[in-house]
Length: 129
Image (cartoon, rainbow, N blue to C red; front, top):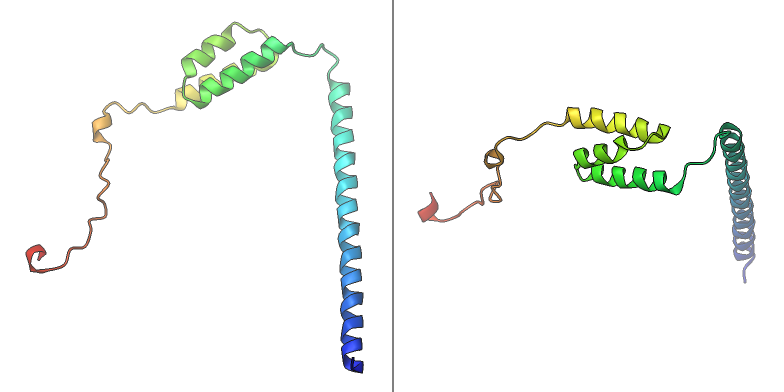
C-alpha cells in the first residue's frame, strides 16, 4: 500500500471515530434529558393529584365520547357526558358543545359537485373541434 493510501485511511478512520463519539454523546444527552423530563412530569402529576384517581368508568366514557365526537355524533357524545360529574367530563362536554355550535349544516347535498370528469379531458381530432 502506498504511503498516501495509508494517510487517507488513517484520516478517514480518525474522522469516523470522531463522528461516532459525537453521535454517542448526543444520544446519551437526549436520553438523559428525556429521563429528566419524564421524572419531572411524574413528580408534577403525583404532587398535583391529591384527589383520588378517576375511576375506569369515567375514563371509558371520556374515550367513548371523544370517539363519537370524532365521527360527528355530537348529540350522543354530549348525552353521554351530561351524566358524568367528573371535572374532565364537564370540560370535554363544554368543548363538544362549542364544537357542535360551530358546525355548518349543509342543507342540500345535491349542490355538492361530484363531477369526476373535471378538468375535462383534452380531445384531439376534427370531430372534437
